[in-house]
Image: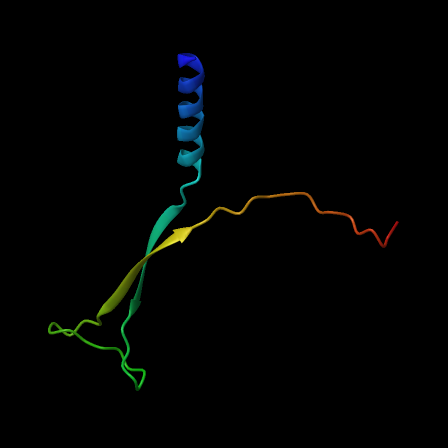
Length: 69
């Protein structure tokens, strides 16, 4: 019974490890209502940064249309 419980816990740990997506930091310059860049005290444009998830696309085979048959 202990081996079964260990096997179940191990399989759940592996599944959750593969389900995580990679993250990427994306920065854009801040703009005001007129569309001009907002500058900080040093005169450089301010940036808004966000962390987004990047998902991998899986390759597959094309499905044939039923109408062609």
